[in-house]
Length: 333
Image 1 (cartoon, one colour):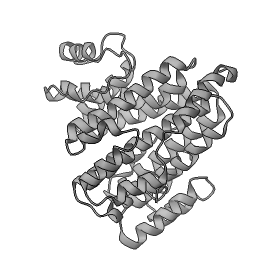
Image 2 (tube, rainbow, N blue to C red):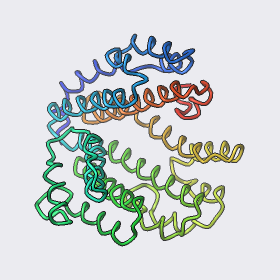
Image 3 (cartoon, rainbow, N blue to C red):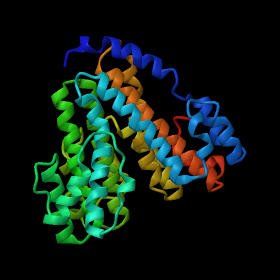
């Protein structure tokens, strides 16, 4: 990585940053009186071209996905180090791998769920699986694909198939961040891994899964050692969270735990983990120039689209502003 390669790109991204929605706009969207009012406010933003599709769930979701797809394609072109983009765009690659594998296993055409960002040969992969039951050609992530298939064949559990690919995905992102060499981006990827491991552990405890069902899928490479989750798995949730006291994420988990203890909803802990990522995402924009500026913008744009999607669903389902805020978190409140 040569930081000088990002001077002009960083200037371009500063222009993009000005179009990100601010907390005032998010609050207006959440407090909108009804779906029509929501659409009207959305039409005043950079999402005006998709506002009329709100209420048509499939078309609206596709339009939002297309916006993200366009962003990633643009950033792939502008960035000399493709790892900067691939770290975040890889979530769509692995989403698509799940779509293809499930199309094969279920014997159904689910390919309308593909989100095309890269030129990965998904249809060739599907044909290979139909003919051979495994990825036999030299596809990217061939080993991960076959590992997921083997896990499913042994367990007959679609969730374990997903978890296998999720683990491989996070390990791939970790390797990309190490190869890139940005301390900030490595820090962010490690935080993401911590967040996912914490959520997986808390969810496993809630659903009374055996410890090995959770520990088998702990992702290595985070700030918190992966074996720590299994070691304290049978402790109550309050003590488990306390184990993480020496790590940066602890403050947010503690806040989430306090809310969970009040109403019993584990979503508070999960949401606080997301908020921790959101808060640190802003720090990338503080670099004068560099891959951090691009990474931070892409991460915040992803979150922005997620917020819009969540609020729209809330409005469609006639949830109150308070119920929607519970799902979006406090950073926009």
